[in-house]
Length: 89
Image (cartoon, rainbow, N blue to C red):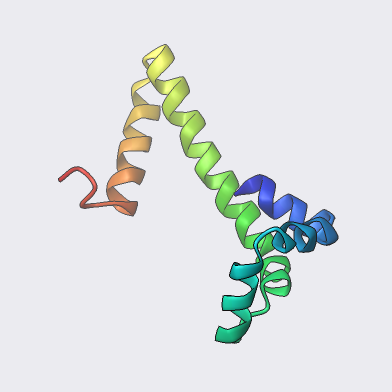
């Protein structure tokens, strides 16, 4: 998600070329009233922030598990319960 956001922010023409490989996706989106390239370009900052948050939580969990840092594991567990309260069932 982070890489997709950076690519769509820095080189939007690459994103437009990527959508050319999926003509059915572009066709269905245009029938529904969406312009995929402009939507992806407009949501680039959101994708970068969300990708950074997901990556940061992943690093917290990995470092906490490797070095047995309890506060990191507690933070990851708390974030997981807040974001996905029913994922453990």
